[in-house]
Amino acid sequence: MRKRFYILFVARDPEGQLRKIPIPLHYAVVFLAGALIGMLSITGMAGSYARMLMKVMRFNQVRAEKEQLKNRYSRLEKVAEDRDIQVASLGSLASEVTALYGLKAQPLLSTGRSDSPIPDDQIKKSLDQFRLLRTSALNGGAAIGISMGRRNLTAADWLRLSEQPNLWPVEGRVTGSFGERIDPFNGEGAFHSGVDISTEYGNRVIAPADGVVTFADFNSGYGRMIEIEHSQGFVTRYGHLSSFAVTPGQAVHRGQVIGYVGLSGRSTGPHLHYEVWLHNNPVNPYNFLRTTMARASLNAAGE
Image 1 (tube, rainbow, N blue to C red):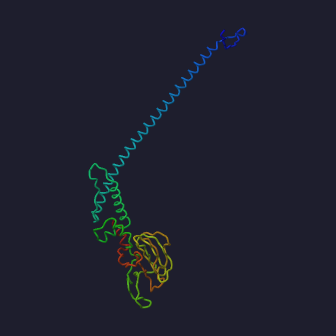
Image 2 (cartoon, one colour; image 1 turned 120 degrees about the vertical axis):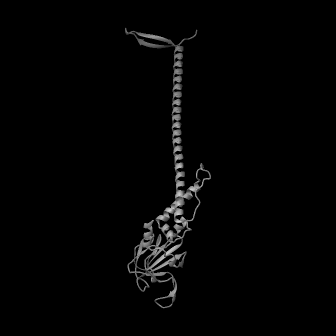
């Protein structure tokens, strides 16, 4: 005879009597299986809903990124258009300044076609020309080039002129020339490596160009001497000073006071002994004494 199994539930009725409710075991198994299937279905639905939410969030993120890229591309297009207009304007300005000051003609920007973007190398060239023109105007190079009356120069030539020691360190009369001369102390022939500029004791000595002070101390026959290293291989020396206004290692600018006229060292009276060296060789300073400080100030004011 087949055995049957039951699950008994015991409950108390309102009269306080215990009652037993038998449930066949296979009914309980069917109920538990149904409950388990229901739970699995709910879990699957919840997982599908979560995956759908993730996809929606990712879609919204991609759409936002697309809008950002679109806006950024529009801004870049506007920047590129503004840059082309600015470069064309700078090229026109450079051409006008070139013609106005008689600079050597330089090629204008050209794209080949009106609807083609301007190449980067031409943009860089145009900006470099503009910076050169601005620099030469600010540092006095333009005034120097114009004052020389030379018409076949470029902005780069102006810049090189402004970097040379072409400003008088003091204003005065040249009493000692460069080259062979009679030594005033022993009466014998000697080579004079600079020029002597006669001026009053204590007058200010200025730097004729930008540079760095490499020496400021007592140096035998020079007395109190200053040496400045400039660009393009130029070095200038200032002897017989009474005192210094700079120290070694200090950067100086064109027109800046560096010391004061004196008669220290082998000197017969107050004056400035001024030397110009180019690539370790002494050259005649008179070839570079083109502009006085007063004249430079007038030229700058005229600009």
